[in-house]
Structures are given as C-alpha cells and as structure tokens.
Length: 72
Image (tube, rainbow, N blue to C red; front, side, top):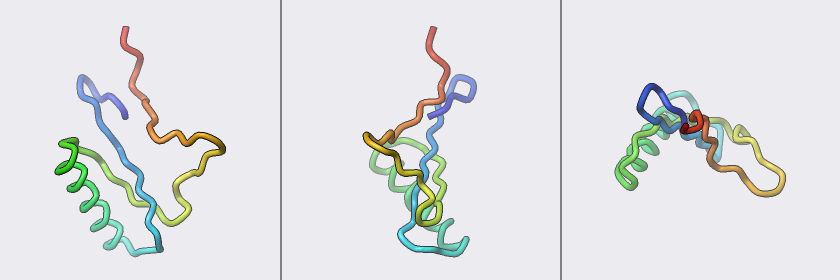
C-alpha cells in the first residue's frame, strides 16, 4: 500500500505456478486485477512474477507492506 498525493494505491505481486510468456503473464495479471475489483471493489496494480519470485519469509508471513507515511 502506498500513497500518491491524497490517494492510496495497492500493488499486488502474484507468483505464477509455472513459467509463462509475457502475453500469458499479462492476461493473468489482468484477470487477477478484474477479480479483485469485482470481489472487493478495490483497484490494484497486479504484477505477475515467475515461480519462486515472491520472497518467502521465515516465521510469520508479512503479507501487506504499508509504505504510506504515518498520519500526524
């Protein structure tokens, strides 16, 4: 989650199960983006990465990274 001006933006990294070409990754990203918008009503920027491209964490997984500045 990031803030651009007064608007928050959400970026989602999706790891594919198998290697795919650019067209396949673009289509998958568009489908995930559409489903998130339909189910949650939230616009996102979706990036599809190769298998193993999402960093695994030791211990408790950190699923959301909030990069917005603190509210004062």
